[in-house]
Length: 141
Image (tube, rainbow, N blue to C red):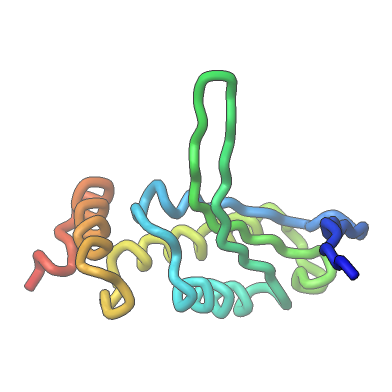
């Protein structure tokens, strides 16, 4: 008997997410996001909404004469976990974006470095100094 696996394609239907955010993490951090950082982001967002999906993904985009590889963090919030009776959805969106900005900034500046290699630490410090104009954590010592 010759058993070969079939390709698995799955799909689902359901209501569209109420809010979706993309953070181009790799552009700013020069590395992939850590599991610890994703967990911290999820906990931060749970202070505002009843549930959230946080996805770390590599996205490849292709054109006729170019391609790009992005590492991004995608945040999706379903309608049924929004705060009940929220009077101003746009204000909520702005508060969530503020949490994302603060989280990204902390990922660039407040990581202990224990989970990174020396090359990743050097890349992180270069980005912090170049993008944010702040001395990297190792340079502050």
